[in-house]
Length: 152
View 1 (cartoon, rainbow, N blue to C red):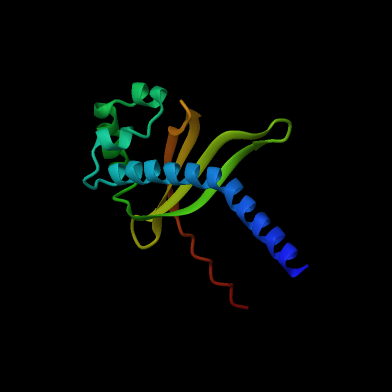
View 2: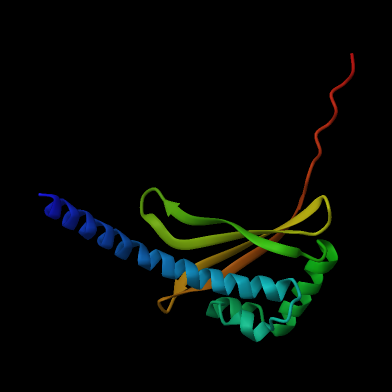
């Protein structure tokens, strides 16, 4: 009886790990593309060519190298130099009528100054059986310090 229970438990463990493999490999591909994109935005040595490998065809068409460089400069001017961007969340788009839509959003936060941060959202959708970046946003965040209570 113990052998049967152990075999059943082993079969469940193996089957559960096989189901998770598809989602894990998609996330790994998205994270790799997002890391290249963020490295290119934040001004490291990653080139447009390396970052654009993860772009969808529509994004490549709408954001060629010259516009990408202008966008990087605009981000640096309006938000500042983003340092130490870290992955903080993955959001899977869900429609209550249709279920999972196939769109994922990876969210990163990096520091700009002591009280100022930047949130980088990178949106993925499947194209030719691979997750591709279809859109991204860089938004400034500021830490609001709580006001001191009024003295009585």
